[in-house]
Length: 126
Length: 200
Image (cartoon, rainbow over all chains, first blue to last red; front, top):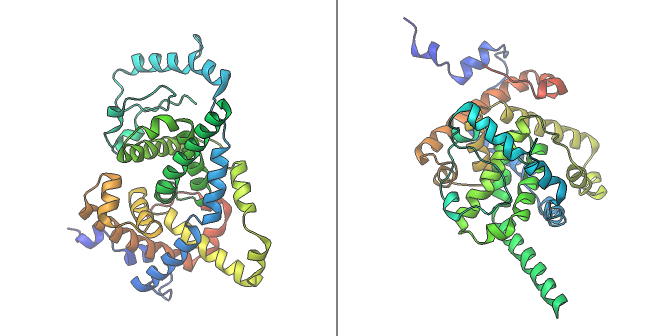
């Protein structure tokens, strides 16, 4: 009979199993909090980065152009028709999400999608 | 007269976008960093998510705030899936962001200190990246966006108690990974190993 510890080894035991020399000190909760705070200060979006992204986004064209629509609606290879084929081959497809320029009804956006849904077959139109 | 009307509409559009951006950029960035574990990819995806918002702004501005957030996070999730499928990640925006670090900022510290700080950051990046995704996301939302367990739970549709447990697990695992990396820092800093999946 194996002990619960053997089944779910503690972080320290896992670290030792992976070849950490015993003289490498463990990291205390306080040290970890300090390290994470420093990391967050460095990785948090700073005002300069936020402004750069804001300006880049606002300069993005809003008109997607003829090519985009053609990739969507081309009768032979258009994404819309590929989607229909995929759906009929794989049966019911749950939680397919795709970005579309078509207006979505507000009621369709009320449900918060669970994590599982995002790994369902996904249709990319862009 | 017609010109003025067009200009007003453009101003309204930009003001509407700014409101949306200011409200959500920080949380969305933390979410993307938590999900991807990669600071550069997270910035790229953040920009891409807001480009989608910009293109669908009329629709978005007609929604209630909770629905706007749902829409943005949905777009972000789709982008993460795209990114997992090997889409190119580095864009011109990345280069622009790198360029925002001015030379004065770079010279303020000694080269040794900069190298050391960068090394520490990369070790923590790597340790965070090695966490299982559900633990990583809650931890980053807590640390980077300073969200409470209840808020994270609402955002990710998980009970607050689960979030608290996951944060505590994430911290334990992170301390372990940092200890491992401290013992063999070169492993973490080799480019090939930075993106290798490590399983206990």
